[in-house]
Image (cartoon, rainbow, N blue to C red; front, side, top):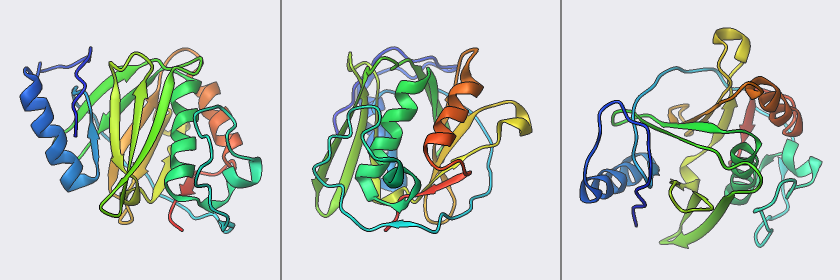
Length: 207
């Protein structure tokens, strides 16, 4: 894995590209998720439910680096694997400024504004695993996921604590990555996302 270390907001400064790279490699190997640049700490958990429509058609080769890359039927169905996950993350990243919070093996967070199409999703397959990388246009921010470890996205109800958060979880419900919408219109953008992706609390990416 190649670490990209840019500006991050941290409570305890982690110094050194070498250490950041080592931490990122360890996190990717053990949890399936790592920051390409490193940050700070956070919290919280919620409960999932399952859509009943399963996406059977392959999305391989689809250009997911644009808003609205999938049809409404493809967005609301479950399944779709790495391509559907990538399309979902692209829309999350470009709807609002976000705080990206990685939990497990400690906690790290960083903020990035990738609105106006300033996000890029890359999918690479190696040793039967698909690695999904979300990077900013200026390459100062990046997150790498092992796509097969991400089973669901859980959209946390903002009425419970005021925060608008998307959690990516594994098959056991353990949080791999949480994405907090920021800004005055965070709740509005969150509801736009929820409405576009079926209006429920949970998306399933496993086929």
